[in-house]
Image (tube, rainbow, N blue to C red; front, side):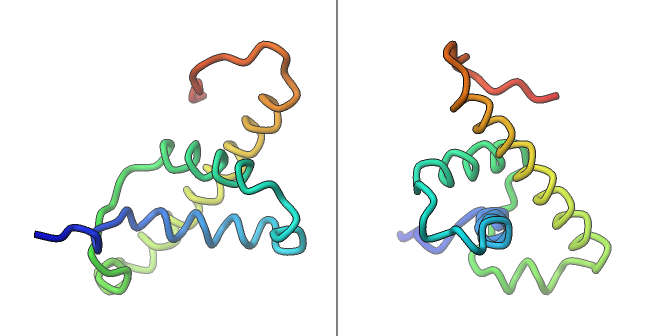
Length: 99
C-alpha cells in the first residue's frame, strides 16, 4: 500500500506564502532558513491531510479559505520573527514557545 500521495494541505499554502514573502530574494536565501520558517509555521497550524489539493479546495467555503490564508500569513510572519531572533541570539532555547 502506498501513502506517498497523502500530505498536509497547509504545506502547499506555506510554500506559496514563503515564495510571496521572499519573491525577490528566494533564490539567494539560505534554504535552511526557509525550511526552519516552514517547519515552525506548520507546527503552529492544524494538520489538514489530503490526497490531492483539489479535494480540499473543492470542499472549502470562501470564508474557510480566507481564514486558512490569514492563519498561514500569521504563522509565517511569526515563524520568521522567531527564526530571525534565534539567529541573532547567543543562547538558543530548544523549543518554540507559542504566544
